[in-house]
Length: 357
Image (cartoon, rainbow, N blue to C red; front, side):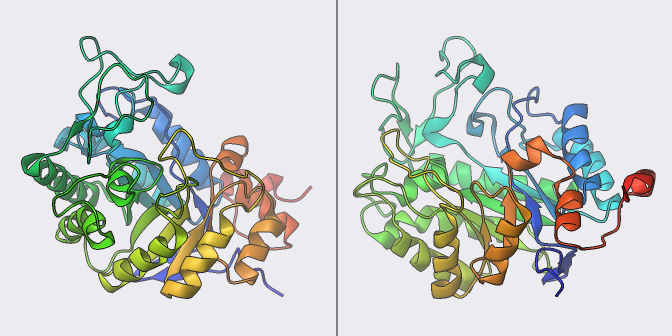
């Protein structure tokens, strides 16, 4: 029986040649938001490795939206040229290029992981962070995030809209809105970080408003025949936070608004979260959203083996399987998985002589 992992999936006018996706992974290797040859080689090698879809790392819609000063950005037209070059190579490998648009909110202005992941001094190379409410991620942070006012909210919405236009010009064929991992949109969704008393806080309908307004702005620029994803954290793993039932509710609304797939992750909002890490630990959330919201889902999190990924699809728990750390360990993951699942897939011509051992 042919594997589902290597079966195609058509979403709108785009067909993925298999269900293996490179998850967005920050490289902390940009200068002023610009992509460079590291990103070309990093993303390009995964394309030649045989995946169906590559989603570029969280790409900042404004300078203050970056997690670190070293994040990729798409807040100015000059960023487009190199991204376009990278996407042209990805497409040449019969792989679909995607982008994740993001705003880090209160989790912005920190140093890259190998520089300590520390909050940066505003008077040096850091910047004032923003959030739905003036609540810091860590209690001992040197300064509070600034609660967004109406003008600030409208600026973020405009930034996402302009970033989407640039993403189209750069040749991306899938766009994912990042509403997970404790970044700005997730901060609005969760009552743990959103204590507003205006139309953006309090009730479920108010807390999802910002995400829906950003989605409308993105849709005004994104071609209607190209796939549109949203990444969510299905649970905060903390009492009183965003939960799986709200995730299903939001996903159903997003589907009605034209979203094609929910990329289901979890956590990242609060430092006191308690996660039971184990293989497939997030897959049940993807299965719940898929079943109860009747929408395509992507499964992520400690998925490392071919049979494991195949079982997720066979059990109808998700429609795509996203790989992060395992793909860092092995850029040719699909080529290896195909051998394990007895699938004869096309290799790059340059590598064909290594196909048979």
